[in-house]
Image 1 (cartoon, helix red, strand yellow):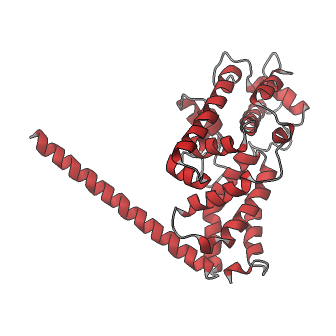
Image 2: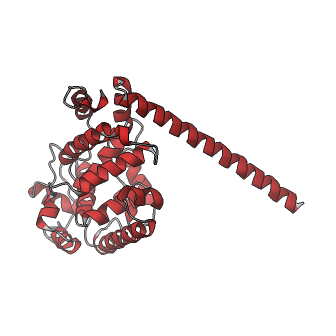
Image 3: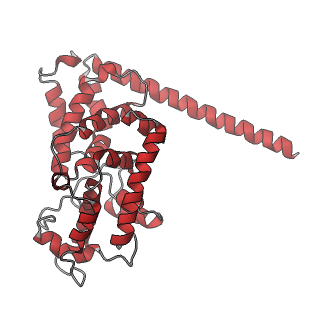
Length: 303
């Protein structure tokens, strides 16, 4: 009897796997058809490709360059490269995975450097910076909760900038975007083993830093966001009138800041704190400008 039950379970698993394969084939075919229409110059298809890719690519850029204004510039360049190279996509990976590869190549070679990169700020340097000017009590000024969230979001962005670009992108792809090692390795053009080694090294460095520094990772650590607000405002890293992250638009169905923060509390590793950002949306005006630019006659690749 038990053997019969096993066989039934195996059949159900096979049925489920078969259905999943069919869905995957259908999705791949739909992507191929969409790209073919875009390459043939169908304006609606081009706009749909931009719509599908713009927010994930923007979030990739934001994690790599830290600040929204820089991410806007980067995603414009990435989207132009993606669209103008659509004819080279052969379905060797999902369209988004392939677009990530284009974006990563651009971001790893970006000449513009973040402030932390220019100053070669290490995690040890950043730890010392956070300790300097930390208030004895929580900030009680206007919009105290919002300002503490702004500090948290900005601080986790700055942490990433203390990693080398190679380590940072491996951590972003694997731990923040939850890509499979094989897909992330393909994006980076390295072996899965090399990717895992790089990602683990980055994760270990960040976890060690956060457990010794960040009160979110360990309540006994010295740095707590509400006590960093005044110093961050004084240094110009947080602008109460124009918060960069807490006022950032999110995708229509994306996680809010509150949902991302709640998710962080359900997870038990330090990487969860860096994952706890909302699903930021690429600025629509910038995306509209990209679509217009692609059909301005300056880029004849879709003709």
